[in-house]
Image (cartoon, rainbow, N blue to C red; front, top):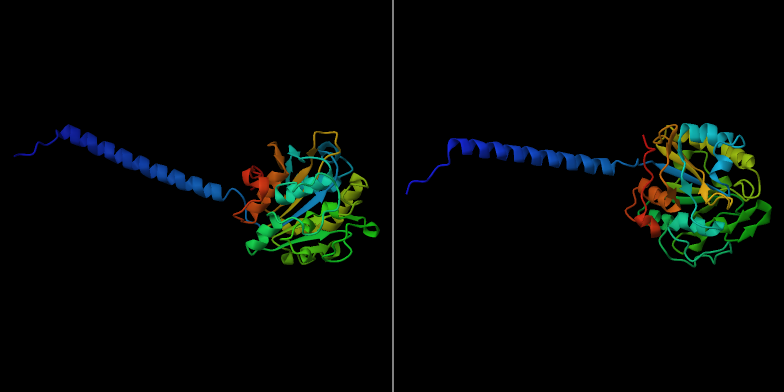
Length: 298
């Protein structure tokens, strides 16, 4: 039996259609690849991130205030300002636990937490499990790893240092502020800096805290601009008068100078961003469902 051939016009149409489909498939593949690359490259991969947590001031008390020239004229002007950044609750302590572990871990007040009483995942335990480095620098802490609840001489309060509550975070990683290195290459992958009760603006003025930031962190901030590193300054909560809207600024080599974001973010978004900046594959507590901070990276 002789095979019946399709008319030439139909064969040409089929060939054209097949070519178009192949081109479309290729285009889709290229687009998908580009999308995957863009998604993976959405956040930078800094060598060091230093997070400073200040206390009990609203966005409008700090941002735009003449009492905070370093925060405004250097960190904000040369970095990024999150205009809709929020604490999650009151008082202080549960906010610190949320920022560090994605949950208040049952903390609802400012009482001293029994050391090592919590085993939940947190930023430090994730870093350690991934073979990355972590430390906290705690002003007023009597000595490295000290588990005291307070130190009146140094205006220190453990309620601002959530890492002590976790059994999976070695107390030896809690250092004094005097141990903050001058050779910034020796800093951990991620670290927290917690000023004492005066210098964090809790008991003293905005101006006091701003001056402290300049004196203690400006050298690192300047270095970070050219050494693949980031400084983040945020607050635990507001003054209870502004809907818990707080200042949060980021500064460093990968932060677009003078940028801002009006997206609503909270402590869980900051934690998620810290985890992803560090290249972690795990996310603690509510950070797992939080989005990263975007729109400020260059």
